[in-house]
Image (tube, rainbow, N blue to C red; front, top):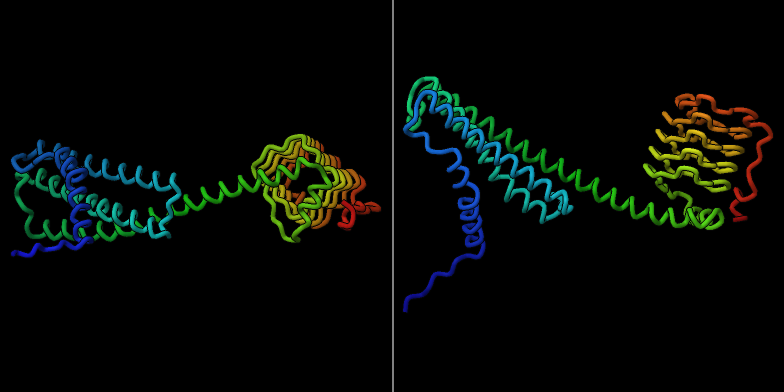
Length: 303
């Protein structure tokens, strides 16, 4: 009885993968670019442009693949990301190199008024092969660069999602009032809470402990920060027009390019802060650092 040969599962999977590439990508692209073997002159240039069109389609398809991986938050650092990256990226790179070299070959043959099925010889062949080597390594570099780029995008997307979730938690405590907020924020001395990019126009932060809190690029028009502890708080590029900072403690507070038009700092304590780079048009800066006393809650014994 003849023994059946068992196929290696890896070989079977790889053969299926190659067959999938041929049927779904390579053959359709070859059909689009056409068969230039009998063409010459201007007609051959049209076939060269069709080869270039095939390369563009391949590149766009790879771009859609990258966008899909970014959308589903698949990173190249993960095993799944590595598999997807190389199973798709490497064939795309080889396909782009092949189509581009074929484009160059057909252009040279058209200029020399030769047929498309002829092979280049001598210096022209060496030139095309040299370009092929350059394109191969450039493609490898591009593949790694693209993977790094979309991996970074995925990381940023995950971080934005995490920040949004954290901000919702912060806002829930913020809206419970000063006592609940100060009890929450002082559980750990180094909290780094972010309200960056949020719209908090008109919110009353009076008496809040906002040490180390970030309000970068936030909208804080008409907000009240009276009697607030704002040490190392970040207001960079925030819109604080019409905001009130009366009797607030601004120690090492960052106001880089902050809009502080019509803001009121009456009786505030300002030291080592960056007001000089802010837009302080019509801002009230009177009685600064005069007999300043911190609020009782600053001792964190009262809430």
